[in-house]
Amino acid sequence: MNRREFLKSAGAAALAAGMPEVLSAGERQKSAVGLAAPKLDKVRVGFIGVGARGSGHVEQMLLLDGVEVNAICDLYQDLADRSANACEQKGRKRPATYVNGKDEYKKMLQRDDLDIVIIATPWEEHTRMAVDAMNNGKHAFTEVPAAITVDQCWHLVETCEKTQKHCMMLENVCYGREELMVLNMCRQGVFGELLHGEAAYIHDLRGQMHDLPRGTGSWRTWHYIKRNGNLYPTHGLGPICQYMGINRGDRMDFLSSVSSNSRVREIYAKEHFPEDHQWRKAKFICGDINTTIVRTVMGRTIMIQWDEQLPRPYSRLNLIQGTKGVWGGFPDRIVVEGKTSTEGWQQGRDLQTWYDAYDHPLWKKVASDPANQGGHGGMDFVMLWRIVYCLRNGLPLDQDVYDAASWSVISPLSEKSVANRGRSLDVPDFTRGKWQTTKPLGIVS
Image (cartoon, rainbow, N blue to C red; front, side, top):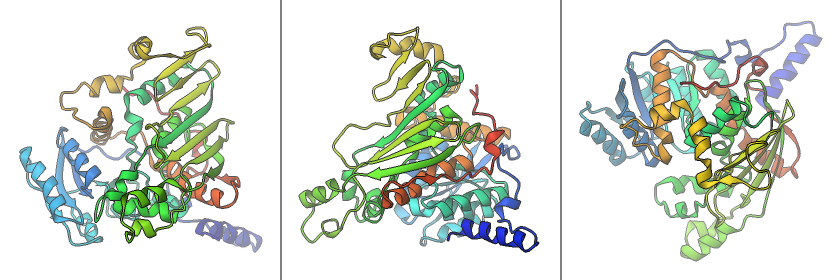
């Protein structure tokens, strides 16, 4: 019995005995729906993890007005120095660095000149670092996924509600040009009533196994050895959830998940590493491709796929189907009843009229900023620009802790479903019913 189940059981027993119901700490806290923190004249930032991903965030933040980088924490001195040097090269003061072990970030969190903390560390560290940041009075921004267990998801939610500090997962794909445009089209009813979405993270990352003794593959590869399910759902899922208004008028109700056999990483290890290498000795258990099906409370369906090893082109699918039409990504294509033929896709250069009509105003404003040197087609810069804008204007963020929890919880639930022959599992309602009255994400200008 997990923590949540115990609390529910204890509550039922207390009622039967005529005693007050036992409630969890989170259930006694104010909701974080629509959380808007006081305006910040200047956003003072600390970073935990400045390797491949975190160093990019530092460089992007240095391009934004009203941002001050005051502290950097990493396991390695050379990486911390690289980002600290980048600050000086941009004419900023050199931030303090913290490099004495895995818990050194806790010392950094005690500083009183930090408003937010950006976390770009291995997956298993995200929750504890975000929780510690919020408990130390800082807004927490963590790379994806925000959590890898159901209990960690609840821990993020309850800490955010208790502290009333932002907890946002940095799902950058929600700020891509295509995704923002499709969100705009959904809000304007181009596809009619939304019925079905398809999301994926299909990306051949076998090459990361060479990242030794340090680097992404040095820790990420162990997850394929220890876990079997959808290990990385949020890049494809986040935009689909925003299109459908998940946690804002609808929510994910239950899921079922299956995985294929695990084959390709073992083959890759035999072909690229010596016989006594740790990857040759490892037993990979994570299926080469996982498919998870979700049904929402309002009767919509979502297919979520994951594959980080099979030889195939990159794709997030990004398909949204409604009663009037459909958009599909990779490659971009569209069918809208009455405006295109339903016998074949409209794609390529023929899509320009759709972009002209529905390009998201946020993308048009920020992506053309001369400072935008962001990776992933510019979405990284748009995401960080928007975060800083919201913080400086006291506005709610586009993604909240409930999004972080519900998008991330697909991983542990898929693992449990896979282990039980695809058994259906309920998706927790992290909003505790607030999804019914929360408005869908609007089209901000």
